[in-house]
Image (cartoon, rainbow, N blue to C red):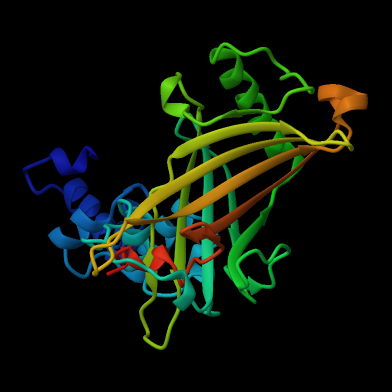
Length: 307
């Protein structure tokens, strides 16, 4: 506070200080304040009209750079969605018949964040696309999935975390190349520091988007060396499982939404762990082991966190 503001005597110095403060437009003062407030909602409620779209856009850029121009909807609701808890589930979860699943294309954006010990180290965007499956086990002509290309630097971070996790589990690193190993129970050990945050933004005929936010904890870490080429594959699977309830009282059926990170060493047997890593990630859904049904599967059973 200035010395002039401390003077109660109405002196010329105090009056000059008041005129100087009054010369600052309110929107400049409010803009400066809003840049330092992480959550503008309380300020917007306390001073209606003080927080404008430009202030929400600043906060939005801090949460996800580029979101203001990429994502649909209003800035205030966009921030609300990005900060929302995972989507609620429809209860009871209905049974989805794989025979009735029809993959469909919809304008969408998939946002992915990978975190290490709660700190974001990679952000990526993709979209759910329809394609013909490489292996058509179930006779489906089209499937839905979203793919992410991962830079080498990010693959190195995940690979180092995987090595630490593996050693904490009591296994030798690198794993032996003569016997494929699969570890299915991450919960039984200290756990990996890598976590996943993912949202699917759908744009339909309505002006407002639908934002689905699955809960994807790390459920499975797997290592395998294939033959005869000696390719080493590590997989980290972040998955939300579903149990559908048929209306006719028959057995329950299962499905999931899964983001799988793949780390591949093409020349593992000749170069060992020094071989170059090729990394990628894929978002898929399954209905009773019928793979790659996302928008047509259990993703649609999640509530809209934009609403």
